[in-house]
Length: 159
Image (cartoon, rainbow, N blue to C red; front, side, top):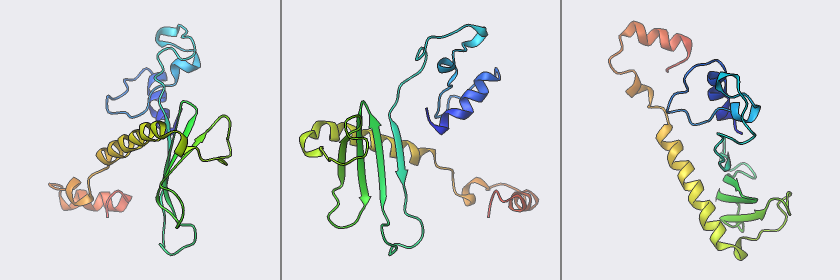
């Protein structure tokens, strides 16, 4: 489960429709509560998906250990893509999550097929994230009155 699953879960448990555009999914099937008060076996109705994490550099580029990296965990594998990295650090590192939970032995060279598959998953995640970005204020506020803009600014919604 991920943070994006909280909103669909709360809506589902409240009896409200989860929007089609929601990125997460309701945890209700894992909680044993099916719609209508029945029960669902663990995993029934739950769509398994990889876990993705990202680390973005914040602030100065010359700060030590500034890195931009993404990771994906799926099927016992953990792939780390080091986008912005220190010299000598490979672009991709692959770890057998269950045998090596502390990420000590990079096995990317032994499993190029796994690296390629998981890298495609990271590419898909980034494409989805780019598509879901909010429009800039200049676009989203077109057609609003000065009064509406001032209200939104006073609330901190637009600059």
